Length: 436
Image (cartoon, rainbow, N blue to C red; front, side, top):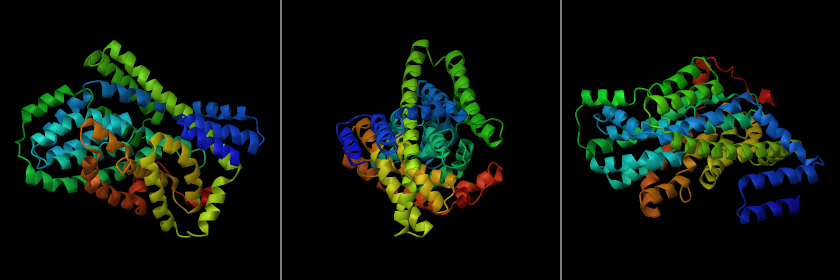
């Protein structure tokens, strides 16, 4: 195995795509370590593409790209500002809600920072907010929607983790709601005094609210369709994705006409490139998961960890440190593909509920985007707003601390993730040890 690892390190050093590195590891392990024909790997691709829930991924990607390329960002900001902007510090609340919703549907914090942040940044400066505060809030808000349905990482975690434990994507959708709201509330509590101190109060303008509502009237029901439909059990994740894709396409093409045929071709191309990237990475990762299971890699890691860590809560603390590093060093899709197959079996042995683990996992990756010194959102904001990297770094520190507090609450108060599952009777919660 030594020369296999050496070869993979060389591939990484020379900048080869991630799917080649993962696929190389799977192929080599099948052939040399397991004496199994490498073509077996393609059965994992077939298994992946025949999973009903996987249909949701390209459909949600498509609807997210449609929304990003239309006038929805501008219309959403206008509506939320008319609805909430008159509240002291209302612009902060507008930013938090708008960024969360947009990230939930696009699945990418980078798109949110570019599309929404470009509109929010001058608005914050116009309202006399300190520049550092505005930069920090926009940069950290870009990833807040990761825990809200129908964000892609929730689906990916559900797809990959379901290979090792009974789990469905709808559980992940529901479990992420309260933790996501918690992070929003904590950010709002910190931001509220800035609104009182620095901003000018604007009166409530009913006429502006009506105009803004009419402007976004067709897009406004979409989050309620998706969230309400899944919570009520009216449709599954793939069905919700189909509803979202068809609805957004019809609205943007034929009603609001924000989407032209030329723009639609570009949206289809970019969304399918993204979908292809996810498909090949996850497919290769499932093959690598088979290798891990056959070689009992998680069991060996667990046996090693047990020599030093016997307490579940200490394990969760160490897991948070590890996942923060993962979150700041790789994108969230790659992290799901590589890390989930290893972490899930180990966490189950420590008695961690797999759904709760998923929320911890994604909350860490969400925070990893803004974790100094190499969080991805830090670089995106630096380039987008033409500010030095140290300036962006200083601006996110207080927000990072707030989100870190939220992460610890999510980690050590599992009911935040599991309460709604019990309430909606979507999951009969069982002892994770029974799954082993």
